[in-house]
Image (cartoon, rainbow, N blue to C red):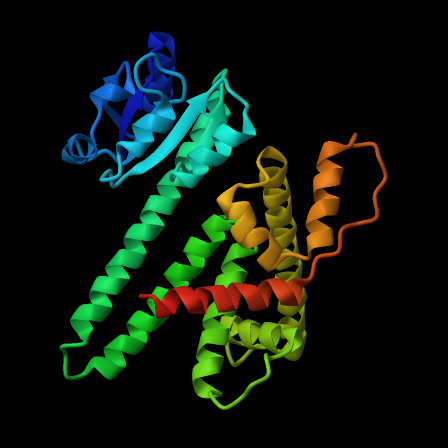
Amino acid sequence: MRFFIVDDDDAIRSILSQIIEDGDLGEVVGEALDGDQLTGPFLNMQKVDILFVDLLMPVRDGIETIRHLEQFKGKMIMISQVESKELISEAYALGVEYYIMKPINRIEIVTVIRKVMERIQLEKSIQEIKTSLSSLLNLEDQTIQSTEVNEKSIANIGEFLLAELGIVGENGSRDLIDILECLFSYERVMASEQSFPSLKEIFKQVAQKKLGSSASEMDINREMKASEQRIRRAIAHSLIHFASLGLTDYTNPKFENYASKFFDFMAVRQKMRELQEDSATSFTPTKVNTKKFIQVFFFEAKRLYKDI
């Protein structure tokens, strides 16, 4: 990855460069003391993937800098000492991926960079799928090949959604992709069916596909239970992810877009209270609606698929 850092503090630029270098995350291809020195075309010519931009700068602040970078094709991460929710909300509305508070924490910087890198890779994969689908339209034997591309594209879309939900790489993420592919195939075969299959049916189909036709009923049942537990843990992790986002900024675009879709409002509110209160405080365990999560995951993936 190629990075560009804009900050009027020499020490901050040096620290960020060192973190990127030590973590083998890419290379810093340029630095600037103020946002007035930047343009979108310039950054694109430098093939910048990720731009770090400070909020408070003497000539052109971070918000104004972003407004002048409409043509920039990369991702932006804002760093600041300011905790104003209005400014944070405005930064997210302008397209910032993450808003990091100073003083800089090495672990937080590395984690955020890796999440942004994952998003970039996933978006590239989806773009490649779009290109593949377009080219396949001109081939005579497109039926067989488009089926293969469909399977690949729905999996990539699933990976993209997992990143949005904060659980890409979790143990249950692979199970969710398997379920997504299963439901996608199920809908094509059972086009006339209006009802959504039961969780038991979904888990059974996925387990049978994973273990093969020679698997015993006992092995299938064991895999079904294990898969459900992995998914429940992944969903619980996603709930914590969105509760944390909501506490940081209730108007965060990802919080607004996904939290209410994937989770019951009361579940999100309870988890936010748990994170706010002392860890010793006793709470009733937050209920996770696994079926709702899987249904929304499928419908969101299908909506994105139609846009390809």
